[in-house]
Image (tube, rainbow, N blue to C red):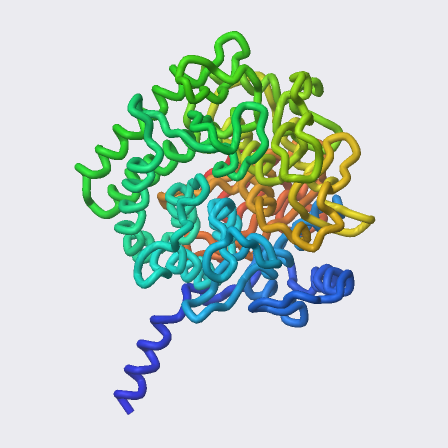
Amino acid sequence: MKAIIRIFLLLCAALPRVHAQGRSMVLRAEQFRHYADYFNGMEDENIVQAIPNAKAWNWMKENIPLFECPQQNFEEIYYYRWWTLRKHIRKTEQGFAFTEFLVPRSYADKYNLISSALGHHIYESRWLHNSRYMNENLHIWYRGNQGKPLKRLRFYSSWNMDAVYNRYLVNRDSKFLLGMLPDMEQDYTAWEQEKKLPGGLFWQYDVRDAMEETISGGRKEKNARPSINSYMYGNARAMAAMEKIAGRSQQAQAYTVKADTIRRLLQDKLWNTGQQFFETRKADGDTLASVKEEIGFIPWYFNMPDSNYSIAWKSLADTVTFRAPYGITTADRKHPAFRTHGCCKCEWDGAVWPFATSQTLTGMANLLNNYRQQHVTDTDYFSMLETLVESQYHRGRPYVGEYLDETTGYWLKGDEERSRYYNHSTFNDLVITGLVGLRPREDNILELNPLLPAGKWNWFCLDNVLYHGKIITIIWDATGLKYKKGKGLTVWADGRKIAAAPKLTKLTGRL
């Protein structure tokens, strides 16, 4: 009998880390089942991976934070994006993996995996209650080729190390994090060997930035781009943090020096003083591309630039440069080469890409949280997130694809099978960390800073959030009558109130 009990306990210990309660405090999952039913009825399910539509709601109920708000399209797209993420979970003989396309792609690795949006996959899925899906996905990417990384792990630029660390800030699974540390060390070293220029910056072809047909570069130009250099800075900072957790102070300091060097070089070499913007430096090393592209906002995704560079965000706030009727353009609308590469061959010369939009809005949330500046406000953040919500429809139904026309909102590959449910961006992470404002951090303090403008919504609730092993509930109730849990902004951990304020404002509470 003792042997049976011992085996049972060992099996329980091996299960994915899921909170014992796993239940919401205020919202009830069945309130939102109609979304999954509606999405299931929108299509003939011609491609099925690990979790079919028939099981979509059960999967969502077991895995996702619940969100309720008075603006129906926000709520609908929130559940739609979880429903679509589930479509991309594939079961392989090595475990679960996340695809980018549902249809096979010739340039994919094993299991139809593509590395370009892996950072997005990690950020978005870090809120799933069952950590097994991403744990196994990362193991496949880094060990799925007979113990070695998949051949195309570095086929595209990536911020995987940063994403893995930021996932740890949510689930606090140090065992998994430190188990991946040797893989991350080898990956960082390989990036330095393959892409580091003699001067210290990193180069990349625009197509290997997952951004083909740009104004600033080309498929064969080895340019120093703000994107890959920001990624490598974020990766170095994450590596320093992971080495510190491992108790390796010398290695942590070495990565900190690497990060500081990249930051200095980016500010010295990629900042166009005349245009007040980070730009691509051409392969000759002597000239900047002299075009504002959306990748110039990526440094803030990693809280990288000094505060005096925040003036770059003036270009986002206006409607002349980046802000178009249906989203944030990938290039300056005033530039003579804007949208000159034709249409529908994956051009990054101006059309709106959710891949880039989610990076920019993540960077914008960091700017609003961590910098003193007067160039953008929470009203700008909400407006641009709202535009992103409104753009995720096609023929009157929820839709997410590759890229869209900035003035008509038409998805440029909307009628192609490859574009449906394109898993190439985040959205729910933007709602959780930006709009609602849950800011993941390593210590035992829960930090909240909603970017919802005052007077916009009278109420919202984010519930069933698995964070640091506890179920978090965040309530905004201007009158106290909607949820009857108190008036104003309140934060709860496992049903215990840990912070409150009478208005939308920054809050902290001890877990």
